[in-house]
Image (tube, rainbow, N blue to C red; front, side, top):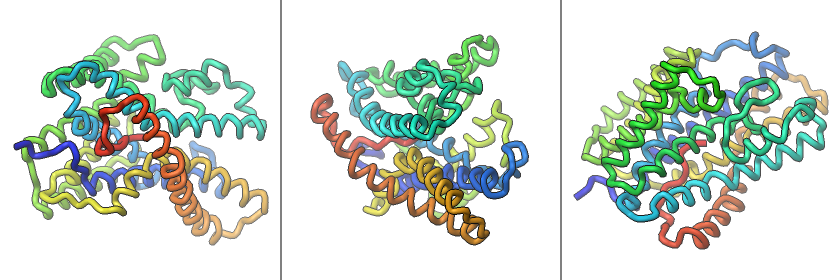
Length: 361
């Protein structure tokens, strides 16, 4: 009997989703304080001893694991690619489109200078998850943190190509395409910005998640003590590389992220709880909404002329955390879930609520 059933969800994965999202929130709180309170530039901003932005790498590894796990029932079925893409788009696209549209409204109302330089091509590409250069020449969508979703959509597209095959062949095909793409990008650097973006070694982090799924599906388990050692070992490795060479991000941050995911999923017991479900399910909304919470609080503090250190260094981070958790909860239960259910009823009648939520932002 398989070590996993499709209906199971792991409490630790849900918690790890939330931790990964909050890591990114912490990174942006630090940037906001450096730029708006201390008056530093990006170049002057001191490197944190812990790379909070590596939360994205944790998300990518989780995504590889969850896609392999939640799609088991699709392998060998006709039209599986369509079902898979409907599920993924239904879970990822609506909230991202909503937040991108909200950003466009804010940029227009506030007359932000960079908005005047934004082209229709970049706007369309942002909604289609395509990497296109922004006015600064960087492949970022309008909602900057959506860059990770451009990698997610690449992974989903490749996964959809093979999902209708037998599982072992399908996962091997996904791995082959991503590895060949990365190697080709290293050996024959493409002139296209999009191809350079998609061939970045960071995409190999999805394969780490698939490899971890392969281990636990075959019965690999660790004792609770061993899991703590592996998880804390991954955490310690993050401190070893607070600043990275992006060429080696897969090794410097991806491997530690993989150790943390392995520790989370290799237990002998399923520790599901309603609190863990809430934490994991709201993680995507946390990731997408915290930018707006930070901007709103910055506007308020600066408009009121508040400069007290206790407000900025203690009150501001706490307000961002509380505000983000509140907003993300409303977004998840008031928007994400209703939209997801509507799409599933209309386009995916065979799907059940047991299919995993998106792992990455």
